Structures are given as structure tokens and as C-alpha cells.
Image 1 (cartoon, helix red, strand yellow):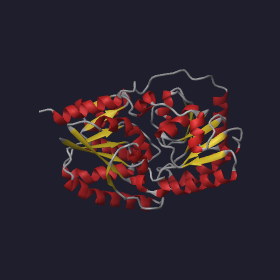
Image 2: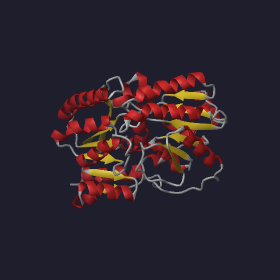
Image 3: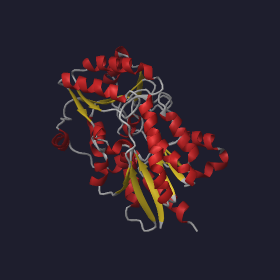
Image 4: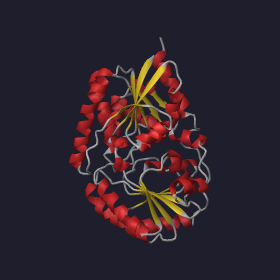
Length: 372
């Protein structure tokens, strides 16, 4: 039996992984060990490792590598601690493959720790560009460290090949976005069930808001959150559903400002973590999305749902017909809202696959690992 380590560092990547993890559950040739680290084991970020276990999956290792704080030093310390803590896992784990996803600094650190052990790596969601976040550097580094690459569009496939060299193109596969598998098969909550679970009424006109710091231009984040909150204050005809930011440089500062806003505005509600079905159900029923999260570029395209993408954090991603880019100023945000309110209902478009990505990734990895 071949042993595979799957790295998950946050609620966000676990929700994307979910359909792929289910493919391994009863397989007799591939054994999957889930390693939960990063935000997963932190009470501050909702202790989302519990969600993995509630879904019926065993976590092989829980790694605490997160240093509290949102300074550049604390992020760097977390990276170093994660590298150290993973070294013994790679030494004794005897893994035939590591699966990683995305572009987070925690993921980069865990994979970096494995490089001296020469374990093959499969990377999901390479080739994308986010010029406003240091994640861009980590994503490209993960691509260069990996042997197998699973991307979501032909454009991203070309960008991966440009990085790794055309001689390695046969190990780059465009199977679409893994998160679309969740959406195509999901039984969304009804608005009544959602209210029972989260005490939030989606029958009200709602805006789903997720705002992270820009980790390249960190000096601008104080003015960014100030301008965002000025705009949100004027969106008083909507219920504002605000999810909390990632563990990034200045992320805690933004978190505190959002929490203060929620406390003083009756139309605002805050959620640390909805879980997969909760977040996607909220996306399905909201009027539009506002912020700078990658889910506005992939998952939102499925419904499709209008998205006001703020600033440069996601700059470089493919702009689909549902996305409106706006500067992070009160005036720009409110103008974008007005434009959406005057726009027609979006027509369905297919950009990121048909919902069979997990099956294709699983079969490809099985073939690569078990071929004689």
C-alpha cells in the first residue's frame, strides 16, 4: 500500500480538499494520512480541525506551528517553527507522496521541510497570480518544489509550464477547480436550516464580506480597513455577513476593526467559520460578495454571483463576467454596489470545470503511484 500525506492548514483549503479526501477513504491501494496544522488547531480561528473529524475523517497528526500575532516577525517565526515540527514527520512517516494545495506560508513551510527527504509532491491550484499578497511567491515556490501539478484552467497550465520547463509538461494536468466538485454535488441548506444552525436570516437581503490584508503593501492596510468600514456603514439596507480574515501580517488589526464594527452596527453579523456547506450556502443566497477572497474568483463563478473585488490582493487572477474590480475607497466601493444593483441577472457560464476534478486527480495519482 502506498502512503500519502495530505497537508491542510486552514478551513479554506480543507473545504476544497473535501471531495478528493472522500475518494481515498475506502481505497485498498492508497492510504491517506491527513495532517492538520496552521490555523486548524487554534481556538482564535475556530479550531477547524474539529470539522474534519465531524466529517468522519481521522487526522493522523495535529501540528501546532502558529505563533500568535500579525507582525512580519510572528509570520516568519511561524514559518520556522512549522519547518522544524514537520521534519520528524517526514523522517519517520515513510510517505510515497505529499499532496499540498494553494499558496499559504504555512503550506510552503511544511513542504519546504520535506525537500531534503526527496518525497514526490503533488500541488493543486498552481499557476495562479495574486500580486497583492506574498502568497504569490509561496505558490510559485510550491510549484517549483512539486512533481505533479493540478491546475484549473489552460492559462494556469501554461504559467506552470513556464515555471517548471516544457520538458516537464506531461506532469501538468488541467482538470478544473476542485472546489467546483463540492458545488456540483452539494445539498445546500435551506434558509430555514441555515437560520437554525447559524442564527442568520438569509431571507434578508445580504452581502457576504471577506476581507484580508494586502501582505505586499502592508503599510496601506490601516487606510484600507478604514475606507471599507466607511462604505459598509452606508450599506444599511443590507444584512452584512462578515467572515474573519486569515492569519496574515496585520490580519489581527483588521479582525479587531471588523469586530468593533459588528458590535456597533445592528445590521452586521460576524462569523469565524461557517464550514464548507455553511459558507457556500451563504454565497448561494447573498445578493453579492464583497472583499478580496479567492472564493470570489472560483466558487462565485459557479452560481454565478456578482463579486466586488477590492484592491490588489487577487490582482492577476482571471476576471470572469461576474467580477467588478474596485479600489479600496469608500467612493469606489459604493459606486460598484450601485453598478451591481443596476445590472441584469448573470447568465450561467462554465469556467472551472464540470465537477469531476477530484475523480480525475485521484485516478491520475493512483496510476502514477501504483504503475509497475
